[in-house]
Image (cartoon, rainbow, N blue to C red; front, side, top):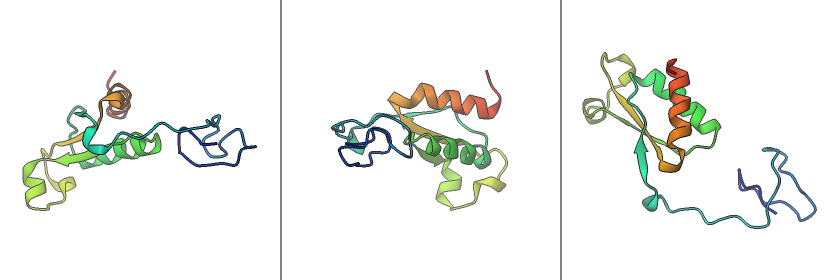
Length: 111
């Protein structure tokens, strides 16, 4: 038996994941290899502080993601939290785009 959310394996007599509180399944679907995932950009964020907040929520919700800073920040390895006008983009798999955009909008106070 497996948890469909955290993918933990359990003994046959266990019916619910103790961490996720979801019903277990007999088999897990195969994970899509990273190179086959279609990554899409969320709206651009106005700095690292917002990006860190969004990333934390995405991680807590088990939404895969990666972050890309603007060229100058990346090229010179400068901490983007100190630069005015820094733009950061978070990418998520296409299947999570709507949910992740809603999270981002809630953090930014948009409707």
